[in-house]
Amino acid sequence: MQLINPANETFLGHLVQDSSEMILEKYNKVVQAQKEWKKVGIKDRIQWISKYKKLLLQNIDHLALTLTEDMGKPLSQSKGEIKGAMGRLDYFINHCEQYLSTETVNVSETHTEMIAYEPLGVIANISAWNFPYNIGFNVFIPAIVAGNGVLYKPSEFCSRTGEKMISLLFDAGVPKNLVKVIQGGGKTGAALLDLDIDAVYFTGSHKTGQSIYNKVASKMIPCQLELGGKDPLYITADNANLISVVDSAIEGVFWNNGQSCCAVERIYVHHSLYDQFLDLFVQKVNAMKIGNPMDDDTFIGPLARKQQINILQSQVDDALAKGATVLTGGKALECKGYYYMPTVVSNVDHTMSIMNEESFGPIIGIQKVASDEEAIKLMKDSKFGLSSAVFSDKYQTAKPILDTMDTGTVYWNCCDRVSPYTPWSGRHNSGIGSTLSHIGIRAFTQPKAYQLKSFEK
Image (cartoon, rainbow, N blue to C red; front, top):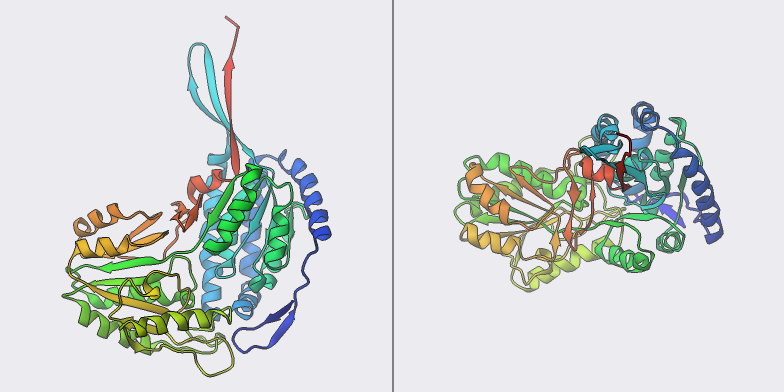
């Protein structure tokens, strides 16, 4: 399988895909290593994270360059992702012991009741290419600390990055047979699911997630899915500082070239601010630099996958055919690499795919609304449920709107933000289960209740 740099279409090397026999051999090694690892105390399991963190920072330039070559993320953003992911490691260092230790929950005259959090066993982690450090750390770090073994399949679009991430785990002291990298595409991921695994954690598209969910249903094992989104942002009438709102919205839409499950993918603006917001927004978009991801001032690099250009173009063409207006962009760049121009489309409505199907690229539809009530109705008109945002000068204005949103996360005056202190979860077509927070730590365990009665007087 050829690996291609999406910025210039140069050849990076070949990906040797694991055969079924190779996958089974790796699985058997992880099974044996996990039996010993679960006997190690929690404090000792946590210690290696600090070493891992130091190694990541010591090698950040090389790691960031590999990520940029793999999927086209601007080099400054690649470094930013790695640095930002350190907060997740700190959270696990500081909180895993608290949430994985056995709890005494009730003591009476006759009984003591406790909850122990035991490892699941061997988990399959089928990960994503858009934020491999953030998404990977959400899963394999707490999974290992909880006492599990891991079969880690990075995306084929970020395979070199995945290898380097895991190799540093071993340098930090994690047993080499406890985590095994499985390389390949969709067929390789499917072969993982045929194994006698104890849980599966997947990040990717709704279509693939649904297929995984159906395939492992008969196994009766935990299946956690972090899928796509069509996240809305609403600008209320009381915003006095539109410049700061536009700046936040720009980042929410175009960071990582819009290739984020929680990117802002549709914007609703109160009619009293609509024209002013559009003017400011388009000015900012036109000022963004698109080009070589190795340049420090590049904000928009190439798309990671060539086929995504056709998906974006079909959404723009559909909107134009139904009466929308392209204010800037609307086509691919004629150059080497998988570049699509940052695109702003106005006069949109929900008959258009740009407002109801996931884009996963640097395009945005902006719709005028007459009231908060209309905005709520449109924001909720989606089969996805990952996040939603409201920008308003008053929390009293935003809160009733946020309270109605059927999404895993809601934002006031911010967007496209993930914190290790709060659960990251989706609803409906955006997924099942949670990573991060204490919920995400315990997601890699199975609780055991202890009911203890002493006959001593």
